[in-house]
Length: 60
Image 1 (tube, rainbow, N blue to C red):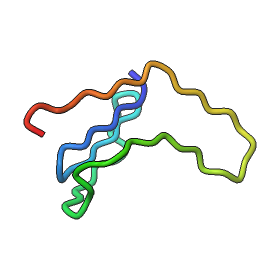
Image 2 (cartoon, rainbow, N blue to C red):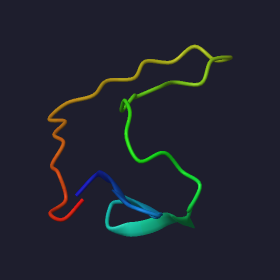
Image 3 (tube, rainbow, N blue to C red):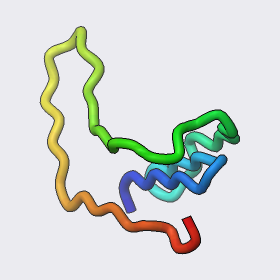
């Protein structure tokens, strides 16, 4: 299953392996812009991304 993030204004829902880990109602959030994948520094680590897809939500 992996990681799934969904922005359906004004709500953000993030799931990890099918379990909701974040559910935020953010009426002030941006409606458009860039999508970025990031790594917070401070530790030596390796991060890899694979099979990333973006799918528009109908009616958005």
